[in-house]
Image 1 (tube, rainbow, N blue to C red):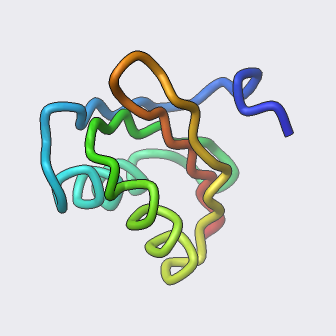
Image 2 (image 1 turned 180 degrees about the horizontal axis):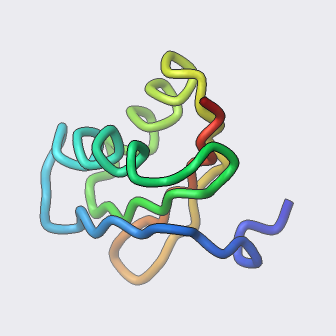
Length: 81
């Protein structure tokens, strides 16, 4: 799957936050998209690369992956329930 072609339904900018900020923003943001929609989390915290997939597995959502941008990552999460 080419992540660069996925259009997020909602984007949350958590680039200025340290752990666990991006994870907390993901938890809030996922409630604002419908089942089947995609949430994008922008994070400058490298810990999000492990935190977000682990949370998705635990919460039943699908972690699609991340794209490295200029100084931050774009994480894509599909809401499954």
